[in-house]
Length: 209
Image (cartoon, helix red, strand yellow):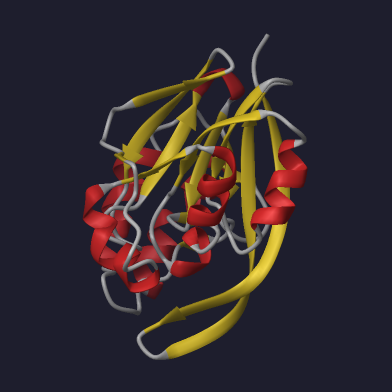
């Protein structure tokens, strides 16, 4: 029996380079009736705990370390005992939000995390942030892309620690090579599929964002 995917939306703010914006974030929970992992503990540890509904939380996986994706991670970890996992290239961003708390473990390209019998393979996809990762679950025909790929294009690259040519390389080489039916669960907004997004790569390159 494969894991199921639960979804909740939490609200808060995103702050970087001196600006602050209101945002809604997708929080993804992958697991079964007894255990789960959380992908991006955004804004509201209480809401995430309610969604876990008593299940053992095995890990808090951070797709990147912008504050809106990690602000609730230490509180959730403290209340569940779960380990916080982050790519090491994200530590400068992490420390902007949590200067006195460190992640518990590192994510690396090709690493496989298994929850409820389902593998999540880590894909290092820099561009939106240096240590941004996506998580590919082949058994679920799903990839969790954080802020790397959205419905309609790449994640933003106009602020510190980001780079447009790099995110294009990540999307082209690591994501658009996945099966077209793969569902793309994003960090904000609606889900899409690889097949829906792949034909538009040249448009994104031409527009520059």
